[in-house]
Length: 191
Length: 191
Image 1 (cartoon, rainbow over the protein chains, first blue to last red):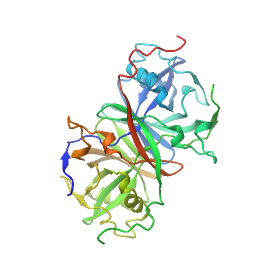
Image 2: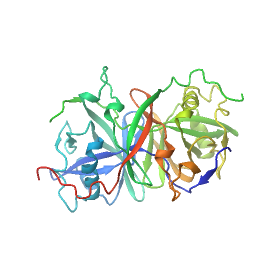
Image 3: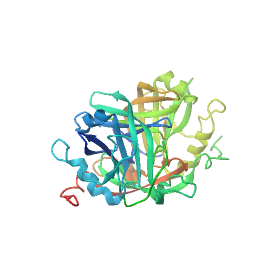
Image 4: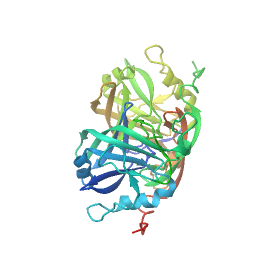
């Protein structure tokens, strides 16, 4: 082994991941929580890992719906504030201006470059977390984050990412290679 | 709504995510697959969404173990090659040099800045994908990606990320703010 390795124990080392502001509604009032413990399941579903103590759990199940909104760096202060205050204690509805798509209970953030409205199709339950499996129903993007073919360009979205254990917001970077292409003709060393 | 939004339909817009090279062993032979459809579940488990046709599915279950290795930009060509060739057709064991931690069947890549050895604790099954829920047993990091307190510094790890639908590898960026801090004293507009 060339490099010195240190065993850190059972630390999750799978960052950075996209910061999402998750929108729900309870009694017709919008609420927001910040979730970066996300997952992708197959090609049509996503997962949000939500601590069971979160106020938003009830709201998610009230409509079996939620929105998942990416944020840009100019939204960090508002999102971080939304993540520090509980909807139990404060009406957070006006932190973000929002609109609706086709689903009830999934408010979509105006300033988000990329928002998904989602239906809850299952919950993968663990001791401390409700892990919501969401089917993406519609995805709304700002025109200026799309390429000429109408596909999402993540260099233009420039979503804010998250990592633990430092607990920082990180910028996303640049495209540095093409998948299923860079490896063509690769020759394995010492073979 | 200030900006023009376009409805893209049910597109997963939750990128970029870390590219992982997942190590398994079958009959004592190492195999590698590339997975970026990952998830974080609570504080101790992760998920890998693996298409059921992948050769590695059998190997994962043979030992109920796998390694999850982040990659740096200098590993893109090798990882992309590993992702294009099936272990069904070719012996991929020597694409990466590896070592073992405490688990059988979870080969850890020497050149990876951050590797986890993991036990399979559950499978969340969907029509097309086996979504492996893995408990992280040990995490091995290069000394030079740790800060002075011994914590992982993701600016130093600089993991390669992935996005769809362009299908590119992306660099990760810089720390741009502190969580649970940036929002202090935030004042909501128009309140």
